[in-house]
Length: 210
Image (cartoon, rainbow, N blue to C red; front, side, top):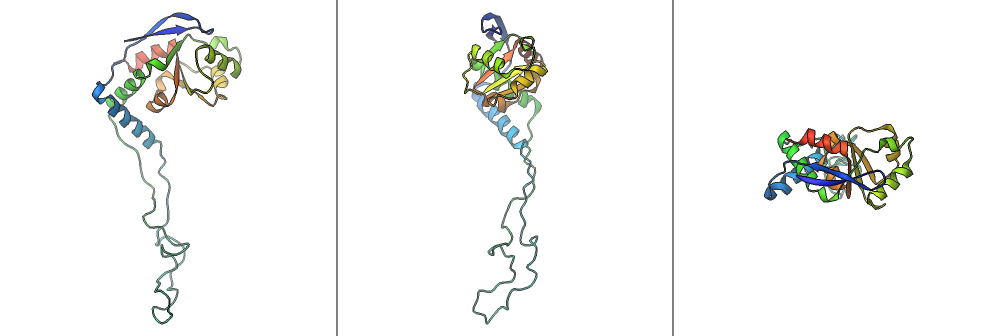
């Protein structure tokens, strides 16, 4: 169990929030998180790249010159891979890069990745009411009050995405906004700091706490 200090909109301490998630054993933690990360990145690949072999390139049906007597190297097609405009040898073809991982393993990897970042976790009170209208500057200022440096990559976790919060956050290139039930290993590991609302912490405990 981990206890985190809860900050309000102004950055003052306002109690504590607890997070209790089962994680992988220390000797296998890095392995299972790595597998989950590789799987996520692999599943994001489209796999639609395609090159043409010498059989698929247009042209080259006629022998360019006779076999003997010209003094030139023998050639059977102008679409040989050795020729400019020819086919590609062992080039990429459409394929499925997706990898399988058991659901229990995926959830265990997610919990392990999250608990490994507790030192970089900042818990704040719900703040959607403080943004009466979309205002990026106010959200950035609040992040600074919570201890976030301007150049740091931030993952902001909320229970429900309010429109004012979404519109205020979308213009910040170093900020990614996610719902608590949309957690993924890549975003957890990529961010320098993680900011979660109290509602998001409760949702995480509800969804991922086995």
